[in-house]
Length: 261
Image (cartoon, rainbow, N blue to C red; front, side, top):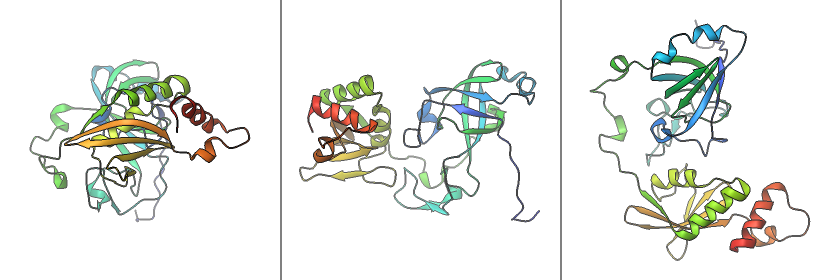
């Protein structure tokens, strides 16, 4: 078989997860321990029989396709690195063949649907295969940790001040805008700008993290990122311009009316 020969893969199902986009999805499975979802296998392919005995395992390996990625990069900048690394020395999704691998806890099986936790993938991700996680075979006690090292920098603590908590709760409850998990995840990796973290420093020393079209202002005290407040990413002229706002702008106008710009 030559390097140009194509291999044909047929997805066996799809992941249903609480993460609607790549920004909100956790970077690693251990960060998503409490995230619950399902793996829905396709009908008409005898997968009911293929699942026999799988409930006897506590965890399964899930192989899937990074369907939202286009192209690949020979060198990438991982979230925990300050320099680019060869893609084969990372777990980046930007790969020649965008195949992902995650261990998930199997909660129960109902027909062709597997209920799982530890979901770290985007909703709608195609599933390629399932395999049982076998502790004595899959754990390598003396494995090295490569360029990460044996003692990676500890995560930053993230603390929300009352105003920021109130704003985040208001956005969640009134417009289904959920910012807290993404902010916590990004700031835990540090307050410095990075390819995965759009952060800029203001003249007063505070910093602003961009999350979609929202701006999260925070300050840093030792190894704690303290979230002070949330602001709209739109300019006042856009917020209060004439005409009917689009669906996205509605939440920003309402937010500005309650909390100011």
